[in-house]
Length: 199
Image (cartoon, rainbow, N blue to C red; front, side, top):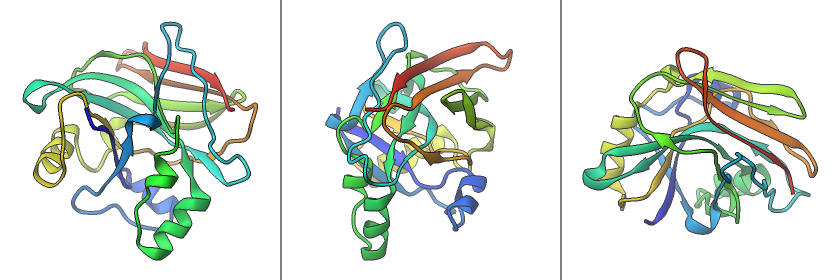
């Protein structure tokens, strides 16, 4: 396992809110192992903000885990916690997003369940206020497309995670904020979730 791969602008609405467009082919960034933090059996997790004096934002996502033969074997709801202050500098210089996306605890993962292809509702609330609420059917590039692109262009390994992109509604996080994220199946049942306090 190398770590986690994030996908840039994989929902049209999020690309628009960030002032851009979704790329026609998948674009990735890397998050090292130190960035990944998984919720416990009760769905509780500490949410690290890195430098809380910076602009830190939440991005709820479908996360998949890669198994043998590069097949998706597990899935969960996740949050790609992003340092926009550092990211803006990286964008202006055309450099890596590693510091913005890969600080300790930046890649939050909820409870794992076996992977099943389908459309899932993903959402996130902060202090009880729903910020993001969308469906994975709106992803520009499917899970299979993302895996194929990573195999062709990056060092994808068994055990790696893929954060498949965030829908619109990203927003700021501050210390002591209470964050809850969920993933629901087509019947509206919560199948993965996490809750935590921003540190």
